[in-house]
Amino acid sequence: MQRSLNVETLKKLGKRVRVCGWVNSIRSHGKILFVDLRDRSGLLQAILGTEGRELKPEWVVELTGTIKKRPKGMANAEIETGKVELVVENLKVLSKSKTPPFEITADSRKINEETRLKYRYLDLRTERMKKNLILRHKVVKFMRDFMDENGFIEIETPLLTKSTPEGARDFIVPSRLHPGKFYALPQSPQQYKQLLMVGGVEKYFQIVKCLRDEDPRADRQAEFTQLDMEMSFVEQEDILKLTEKLMNGIAKLIGRKVTWHRLTYAQALKKHKTDKPDLQRNKDELAFCWILDWPLFDWNKEEKRWDPMHHIFTAPQDPNFKDPKTAKSWQHDLVLNGYEIGGGSLRIHTRELQEKIFELVGIPAKESKKKFGHLLRAFEYGAPPHGGIALGIDRLLMFLTNESSIREVMAFPKTGDGRSLMMDTPSKVDKAQLKELHVKTV
Ligand code: ASP
View (spheres, rainbow, N blue to C red):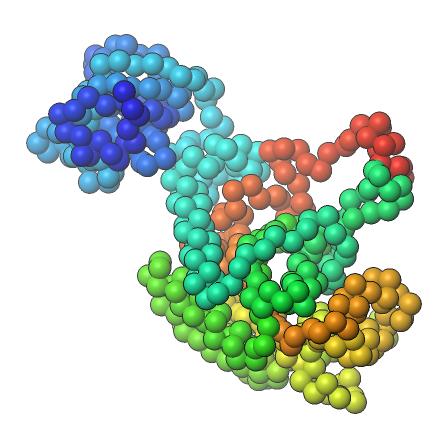
């Protein structure tokens, strides 16, 4: 017999079914046992006799029996299958379980987070985590469809690459075949997406992991997911409008109210004393705010040099600017309820201007050729004007689910200091492995 999902039994009154799942709870009434069976679709009440005596929570079972309407007054409005129950004829135990370290039936937010992260696969069985992962899937699917409908194509860019500075340290990967040489994991696909524009793609997107080796911070993750996009022959307004349309679509999908605001960087600082103003008026609202008209540079007092406010690829509003102090850029940051959830810009697309910026931020010509020669060279072969944005999917999902941490919307997050308590990473590797990689630890 084909396996039915718990919710499907609603349409199978009087029929024999086979269902599979986890024992969610057991209530014993003398010789009769009421077992709530949990599968990915929800709960189903099953009635067993003494054959179910040894069952324990979280055992995996297969039940065969007949679906009956529950007696009058016994319906349970709390669960989708609350009007029916399964009268079990055959019980098969597929897998036993130890007593779990926490109750799967409760809202796991009250449970010590280290325990939840160590037993993440158990935490994922909870109703709330399941809902969060499903919503994440729906939002990401909406994004993919939206980008597709708007003429973008998804292109994968390499993970083993060269550093693209986004203001953090790189994770580096030693090369076995090239002793003493290293790859860097991408902080973002920034350079690749610009090279795709030179490649004539015109409209690129990717749902992509970015990796940044940052100092520990409570609600940051070293690897996180972005909706990354880039387009050619556009003005800044085109990028803003497309992003607004996308966010409005997502808000509609989940029935949330949206407000849009725009501030210049100077206005934000003056009015709100921050470049990430929280303009939310009630807790259900998604208050988006664009921050525009950014300075191109930020003076780095310690190093006594100009740092790019965004990144070195962002275009100045006036390509012939003279004074780095007053130069404005085409950067756009998107703030949601007081958090930066995205950023992007129009880009530099000529070698001369890119070299001028490298020089101003203190990258000597020799070094910029070594590090960014590929990009400078590409700009000499007909680079279209282009720009884009990247939106942080984890943070966005945190607001869409009203959770208080991005870890609640990720299947396998790490701790704030980058450890996986479940996999025990980072971990030591064999001496032989290090030798093969030509690496010595000190
Ligand atoms: N690469 C940038 C980032 O990850 C976004 C962009 O400029 O499009 O923040």
